[in-house]
Length: 427
Ligand SMILES: Cc1cc2nc3c(=O)[nH]c(=O)nc-3n(C[C@H](O)[C@H](O)[C@H](O)COP(=O)(O)OP(=O)(O)OC[C@H]3O[C@@H](n4cnc5c(N)ncnc54)[C@H](O)[C@@H]3O)c2cc1C
Image 1 (cartoon, helix red, strand yellow):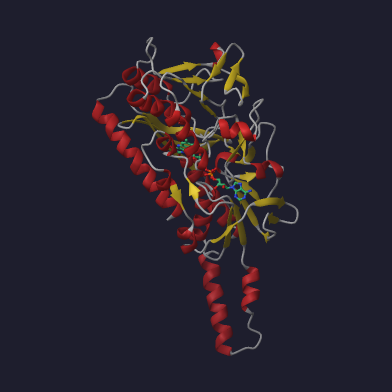
Image 2: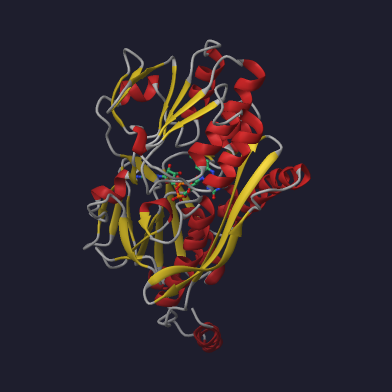
């Protein structure tokens, strides 16, 4: 509600009360006039959208529907795998959002009806909306043999929680001399540097605990995010590209693409070879979370095309898709980008519901990674919309060569970045 209408509203109700009129509108009539926004998914995107809509216009009723009572964050979850951090400190809850007036419902959405503008849940509830925001994170495309049983035997740990601790346990149990096999996904996927940070921290763990083992990365790609910084760090710390390297990276051009897995035999197959170990981490190709697909919001690549000014779906008007599930070429799929998209979307939704034009967006991203517990690197970018495309207007990466103190400092910044974004998301 704009200031003008809010003032008018106060004047009107004040006047009506002074006259003592019996025709004063009932509370329920006011409530019915309130605009309703429903948000699906209480992660980095959905929580921020819900909170910032309430901050932008407290007269909008916001309901956040999240399937889990607790949220386990992806950022810093690689640290849990190698014992640098407990899973418990990755856990966040929704009390902070309630303080902003967000109605939080713990339930799973299983139906979206864009024509009736309703959302249905597994718990049998139905919610009406004027605008719907969908932020369900990622789901996975299939790899031959990677079924529910295989997911337990060869965890992806690409949604933090149980999967993270399962992979941590398998790493602890790995026999010294056996490899840690990491199957990286093709682009686009959640957290582009994530698999390589994971490989780095596992190498650090092996160096200290199982020096006869090594990490083998099987990759369908030939390059990856912050690659010169990662490989530089690997050379410095893990003997990369020497016969005793703790990391071996097999890119797509050298047959790194995995075509099939066999969980019973704990073996993965590429076009050229097979790899066996008790500890295999498969990160399958990503797509938008299941509910987005079910609601017909996805395209043939599995993500949700959107208008980049508002994040409104180009498939279903009135529904916005943010975070990893959206197709926003030019922005990485990261928690920070999801935060930025959520703010652009929240501002647009507040404006639309108040009959105002939407603003001109800009977006930001910063992503830290650890190559060892005290060796941090980062990438940062500021983006704007240019002729319908998201383009980077400023940014950069950590220096290629730097003193140890600089790398140490970035590792500290990593943790403070995390604390700030979590305070923003759930505080
Ligand atoms: C190992 C790892 C490291 C990472 N490191 C970083 C990092 O350093 N920096 C960074 O910026 N990003 C990082 N990320 C990426 C970051 O976690 C994601 O980009 C971010 O979580 C995306 O936010 P989202 O809102 O799209 O999805 P999510 O945060 O996954 O939230 C989606 C929510 O929707 C809920 N949901 C799904 N379907 C339904 C349904 N049908 N009904 C109700 N609820 C539903 C889920 O339970 C979940 O809580 C990392 C990720 C991983 C895996």
